[in-house]
Amino acid sequence: MSETATTAPTREGFGSGWRVVARKEFTDHLHSGRFVSLAALLAVVAGAAVFAASRFIRSVAVDTEGVPALFLKIFTFTDDPVPFPLVVFIGFLGPLLGIMFGFDAISGERSQGTLPRLLAQPIHRDEVILGKFVGGLAIIALLLTSLTTFVAGIGIFRLGLFPVPTEIARLLVWLMVAIIYVGFWQALATLTSVTVRRAATSAMIAVGVWIVLTIFGGFLFQALSAVLANPDDESSSLRAELLISRLSPFTLYTETSTVLLDPTQRTTGLVTFEQVSQALVSNLSIPQSLLVVWPQIVGLLAMTTALFAIAFVLFMRQEVRA
Image 1 (tube, helix red, strand yellow):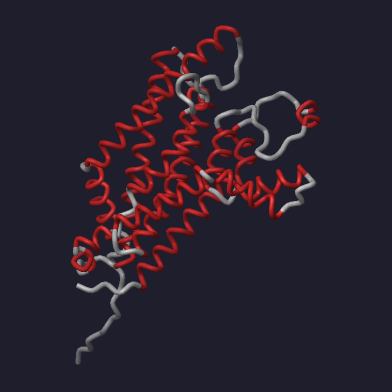
Image 2: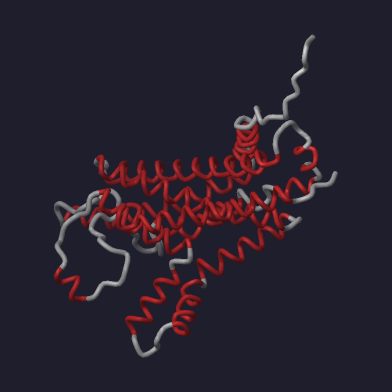
């Protein structure tokens, strides 16, 4: 007498479905006009920034010997007529990069009527949103890595400077932080894409948050610190403003980039003139620099993870109708 064993449905395919979605998302982005236009824009901005920085670095290299991390100054210094160094440009334009690859992740499928057909495939719903996020993050990583390599190549060609291993290590760590930073904005755009039905509305909400936090954030943080801190105590007001500003991913990214790309930076907090005069002039090692900005890195990663987790849960609970 044979017995037929009944087994509950298992998720044997989990772990491969999201890879299929991520691969398709990556390929679609790679062949889109959006990718080409963003890559061209970043290349122009990076080229202008590194050419401006190279003039300053050449003058410093002639007059000074033993300048610490001279190669990294390609990313952190600028000169007229370019107003910002490359690191700051990424801080401002990086959010737009993340928003462009996340604002229509779900709302675009919904508006085209392809979301029900996508979910009807033998792929679990959670793998759909995970694959779309990973595919977008992969294209962001490709763009930022190519941009960093492009800038480094121009610096080597124009200045004849070759990075030492410690400079390469610092650059790689900073690149990972930049990817996490842009990933935060992609996660935010994915969240708006899940919560609203129209891709244009999703993009407008994400861009609005970017404008508030990045462009007008300084005024907002200063106003909040004036309300929360003692206005008669200047140091207390400055500390309050610094703490509030660290709620912004732009502040966390800026502080982390400053310390990672400049080994002479020893702190991200407020420093008095007495502390500056008593400080020892020495360069931090990479582990020491990481210890200084470890809270900022963890904060960026936590904010990115939290936003994607919220988008993930909301998408799993949504009802999708054909």
